[in-house]
Image (cartoon, rainbow, N blue to C red; front, side, top):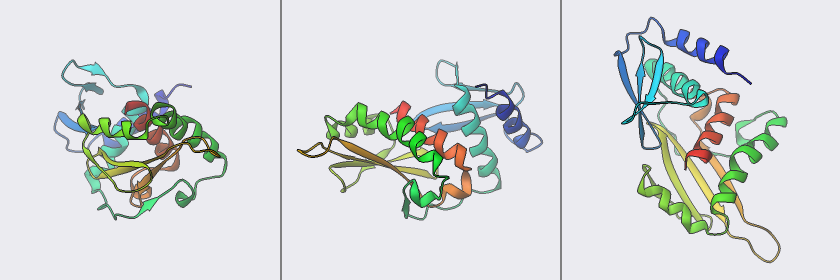
Length: 183
């Protein structure tokens, strides 16, 4: 599925706004430069083009940042707390949570290595948990539980309550998937 229409619409949303030609955006510790004139987003230092999903997220983030990001509330919402359409639950689990559980389920403490390259901190909950600052002002909480005699390993991704004021439902799903893929 092509994201070209969403990318064009996202560029249009920030056109005419007084942005610095090469605006810098941090995502999970990586720096991206947004070239407004050439409509390109490149990851530094090698100037690698961002993938289409991340382009849409960065542009939607910038559009919101221009008008003012809401302050994080410190209240965490799970997928069900986001009041998403029921059909998205399985997609969210498959594309984000399952990916994290595959990476860290056999060793939940391994999630802490993510903090060596990504801004965030350990959190004292679940068997292992971290918060990450995905974008400036947009924290994400990742929780992991070890397998036991009855259940396999489990995980969860939670969002600050302000996420619903920043991204639409589809963006939140893509956001979770990109976070899971990146860490």
